[in-house]
Amino acid sequence: MTQRISLTRYLIEQQRQHGLIPSELRLLLEIVARACKRIAIQVNKGALGEVLGSAESENVQGEVQKKLDIIANEVLIDANEWGGHLAAMASEEMDTIYVVPNRYPQGEYLLMFDPLDGSSNIDVNVSIGTIFSVLKKPNDDPKMVEPVREKDFLQAGKQQVAAGYCIYGPQTTLVLTVGHGVSMFTLDREQGTFVLTQENVRIPEDTKEFAINMSNMRHWDAPVKRYVEECLYGKDGVRGKDFNMRWIASMVADVHRILSRGGVFMYPWDQREPNKPGKLRLMYEANPMGWLVEQAGGAATNGRQRILDIAPTELHQRVSVVLGSKNEVERVTAYHLEADAQR
Ligand code: P6P
Image (tube, rainbow, N blue to C red; front, side):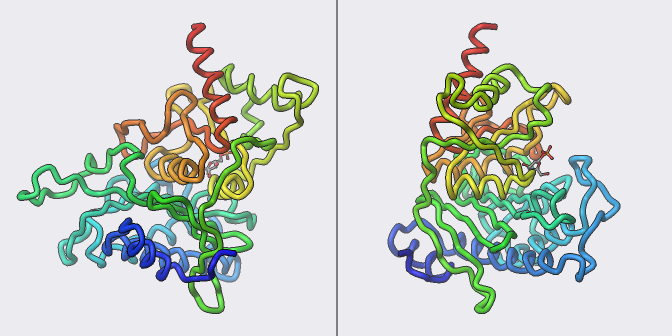
């Protein structure tokens, strides 16, 4: 039975036991958690809060922004800019990086986030979430305090020092890793605090559940078609077992299910936009989710290589994503490599 302790106490104990969380990083994580509580309050208002619907604007991705996308982004910026722990932030909702204003001290961390992932679900009351990733600002020359630049964010996912998400669903749950496993904290609304409800989250290496948007089937590459068709044939085919399918169209919700009971999530390249490697973003969706899944014993690739090894070239670059139960991710990846070898 997991001891019901607060997020603050958990972070302090992790610091004492493992020395994993420098005080500045602990402050950052507590501030992000507090911002997620504020976002949850707005999300939970729904139609009562005049927060639903479109903001009549587009983000850097060319996607129509929902009012809550902008609210969540502003909450995270306001909460984090003054603390002295960050040098800059980057967001799916902002074209370029947000450098901490000169009126505040600058810290050594870089924070990236998708402030509200799954926006298409906001107006229909389906779970959505905030995804965040933390890097250290590269400091080439300790004597020189270089101004932070966009290129400082372009680090592979394996350089992350913390990653997590907060899912706004039937429960509001913060899921976090600092490189020592994955822990889950459920928001106790009466106390207004995140309480530890699960430690050492583990994803089963095998699964009977896959998640993909089946409406795109005719656009997929052959390896993905092969894998999904084998799942659909179930015990009548080569897999010898039946599969179930889920697709919530909210990565946070699909990943939370996989962390909770296993499964494989795929958003692969498809021929609708052949110049884009995929729909999801590397820096603030695939990298944090990929690290969480790996820390829970799962795997995360782009179909061919480990996501966390990908060297980014652009802040908002996209990537194909295959993540979840290790043996299934390895099978999908093997199918891609086999197909490449035959080309
Ligand atoms: P589709 C939400 O917009 C998102 O970025 C992810 O959270 C989700 O997995 C995916 O897009 C859903 O995409 O094409 O199925 O609507």
